[in-house]
Image 1 (cartoon, rainbow, N blue to C red):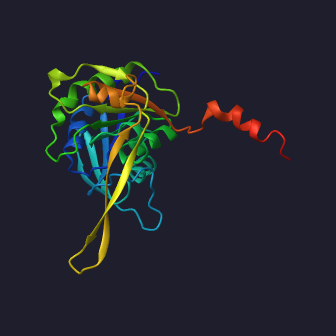
Image 2 (spheres, helix red, strand yellow):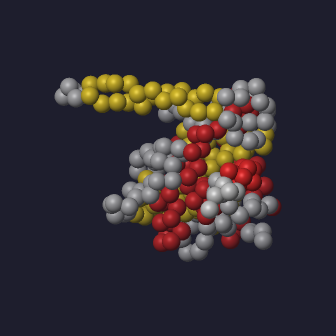
Image 3 (cartoon, one colour):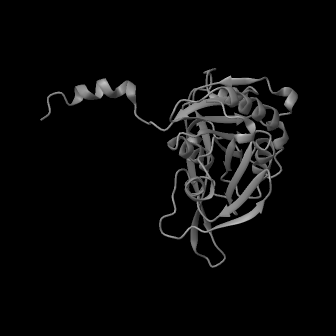
Length: 262
């Protein structure tokens, strides 16, 4: 069923906090497509993945309301924000869930740690059409205007098509001038890993603490069908990801391991 723009309810969240430039850019674009309910935390929740708040009460505050949007803040994680909005803050089930625009790429295995993509996956659990957006720029002064054209293209496609149940989109946009972006590539997730390093430091009281650093290693840099390749070659990458984490291709082989067990 195609939902008309005037009837479309869009839920927006992120993991960079309420005042992140990427969130405000996404709000601006989303308002062109329907009525928006936005909920975000006051501070960054990057790297929270699918974490839930279970030991503390979640508090929410309505900050702004007009004919185009309602804006809330809460003290929970991105996943908390989605659950809370759907259960308490929206008058009905949202038609779309948009998450981002994240400061920094969520390509390859970064999707496993991302609060941005966790929110999109949470939307999948409610069968909401969900998309997570990220800009490949970690700087505080990142220019999110280059995202606008491609977010509009993707949202226009959602107005005429429907994602399968349990599937959302992971969209990563290269941080280059718009005239250098070569288009959109539908990709698979690159195989890679983060090589963590912990710097040992001393606080002002002389006590030891550790600070997480590290770098990403792409294990297939020459593969041309991955999100990492697309970003490196100035394409907007779109990877369909799913809630079902079953390794279906391995089921038959795994069954052979246990054929003789009792």
